[in-house]
Every structure is written in structure tokens, then in C-alpha cells.
Image (cartoon, rainbow, N blue to C red; front, side, top):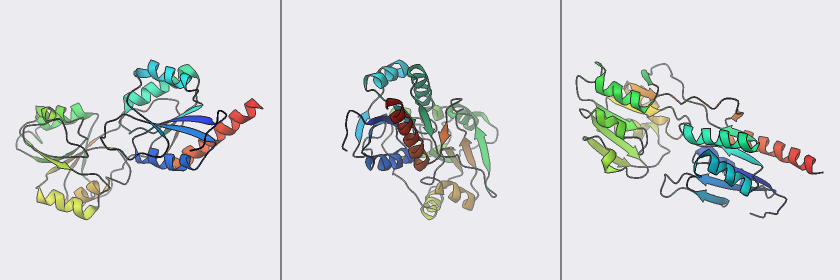
Length: 267
């Protein structure tokens, strides 16, 4: 992408479909020099033609230093709705450096007629329910566990169940509950295949984070169709006082407004 020393510099904290959509807009905007930052969790991520940085910053202090060193003018936090630590680091670093910060986050899923949702505040609470709740600990369940490969260890406290675990990359064997079947796959998925998968494995409970979005929503539609209950892990609390939008187009409009304001200040 063409750039110059006068370009408006943006850091996009990515890893979501919304971040990818924003990057496609930025690829077409030569007056903005954007860097996409990825945590490095996925082994073969889909990369844009923008500058890409992979790996952590070293906490909020490290991020603050990076922002100042690279003369960043604005930050878009488009990380996963459950990446609460990174979002907090971004909020702290941007407050310290007085750099505008926008949160780009898709809305969460809502319970629909025909759904049977149980709620847990976090992974530990969900695992505890499976281990100790009278509803779940009296018999072995066949559980479709879709919380991501990095967050399986809490469920080792409920070893009586059988788990179907789907992830893009293979999980660490040490993190797995004893009765686990691994399915490596990448969305988007459709409701017919999700329903067939649940039927083939005899699933009796779906465990999911409330990630939102369309790519993995069909699993909830399939659970509704098959009358399978869902243990839904609620989102962590958002950082207060951070402006938030839901679409890449809205984020782009915010960036362009800040770019125009920055240009006026220089005149």
C-alpha cells in the first residue's frame, strides 16, 4: 500500500471477521497507513496486504511504547469479544498516550423461541456446572464443546462426560478432558451439517461462548432444531467509556472523521 510520512497511522488489533472486513477497507485507502496486530493463536491466519504484526506487546506498558514509537494516530480494538485482557491493555495504553480508541465488536447472540439456554459467567463456572450441578453430574453427557482450543483445561474437572471438541488447530493434549474427540475444522458452517454432526455424535449439550456473528451461529440453530440445550458463556464486561461500533463500515467512518480532524490541526 502506498504510504508517506504524512499518512494517518492506525493500529488494528485483529483476529475477527470484523477486523478482516476493516482491513479490506483500509487496503483501498492510501492515505491511511494501517498495521494489523494478531496474537498468533491461529497457525495459518488469513492475512491482508497491510503491514502485519504477530505476537504480544508486553502488557499495556509495552503497547504504550509501541504506539509512541510508531507515531500511531488511532487504534481500533477489533479483538474477539472474549479477549478481555487485550481490550483492557488497549484502553489503558490509549488513555496513557491520549490516542483515540474505538472498539469494533459484533453484537452478541440472543435467545430465540425454541432455545433452551443455561448461562455461565465464565469458563470456570461452566465447567463447575458440568462437574457438580445435579442436572449434569448424575450421568455422562455427550457435549459439543466449542469454546476454543486454548480454553479446554477447566473442563477436566468434569471427566465423566464425553466431549466433541472442534477447533481450527489441534489443542494441547495436556489440556484435554479424558474422553475427548477432536474435530479440526474452520467455519463458516451451515445448519444442516451442524445438525447432522450433532446427531452423528449423539450430542446432548452444546457449550458455547456468546461470540456473536454469523460464522458459527448455525450450531445454535441446529441445537434449536434438535431441542438440544445450550450452556452459554456470557461475555466479559466491556471496558467503560470506550466508543463502540458493530461494523467495519462504521469503524471506517470513525477513522476518517479522526483523520480529517488530525489534518485540520496540522493546517
